[in-house]
Image: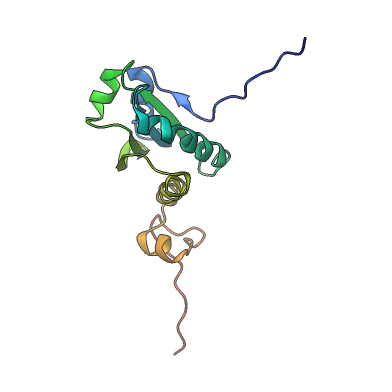
Length: 151
């Protein structure tokens, strides 16, 4: 009889305060945390989009990691982030909360949020993110390449 294996999920379940403290410490990296509950219909609707976007962003540089917190099983982790409504996604980079999204997103909107988070993680400033410019090699974080103007 052939044995089937289920593929690994592209996200990690956060189940301990220590894991959250590592993520939220300086140098903790870039992550998207989905706070959800099994009884929540919008959370269940978001789940396949979250998983698809997490799989799509596997291998990104800088790395972005995806996490899920079951608020029923881990209420203390939800309380640490002051979660009042679910689904809620928290976008973090090196211990800093950069954005909070309350409510379900489709895959396109979630992917756009992750792209924004990655651009922030790369140190791109607002203008670079707006017009798609990349920082010059060796430029300080937030510096954008400027077009030269004719004299």
